[in-house]
Image (tube, rainbow, N blue to C red; front, side, top):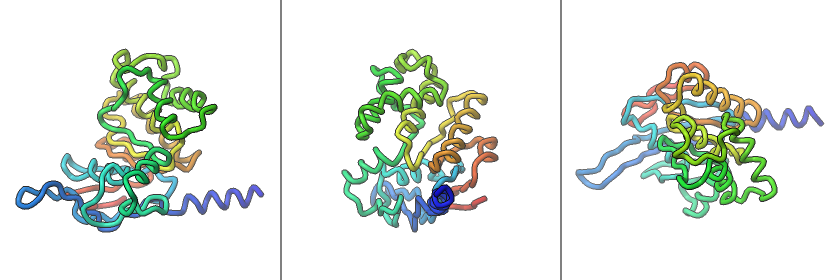
Length: 239
């Protein structure tokens, strides 16, 4: 039985959780339009830690927004966990985002009148997480990012790094299949940043969660499984 369970886990990790074909994203119309992504092809296996690198304006954040079902491509096809995101309704995309994805933004996007714990618990609530398990999951997520002692503080009572860690706890509390992070360590000191990347690695290794993050930090690029470099809206290199 154990052998079969391990075999099933390996098969799941070998499967692709993201497939993107010919992704194009154009903003505006006519002579004033700007094409940010210009035919991106990308395939990411489940249970991998992936970094997207590139200069400002290369299309990293736009690609993260498409992968997270926050935006739709102008052209191309995007599959997540077997679902064609480009053909789903907004309601269907919202449900996938709430239940199967975790999103970490450059702006922390915390509710200012809620404590760190309430910010995490609220997202579990709207994501239909079982009521009897919400408190334990929220506290555990905050403990993972080192904020258990500060969980009853509101965002204005937290440092920038603590707010970022709250945002990360909120994104991982429901154990998503895919975690998308836009510069997740940008506001953190080097020690805390490495702690967060280690946490991402643990999520990948122990739970098979796929993590895709954007970064400029060369130290992080040494830790991830694969790096995709974006240049002028296209995948220029992979290593």
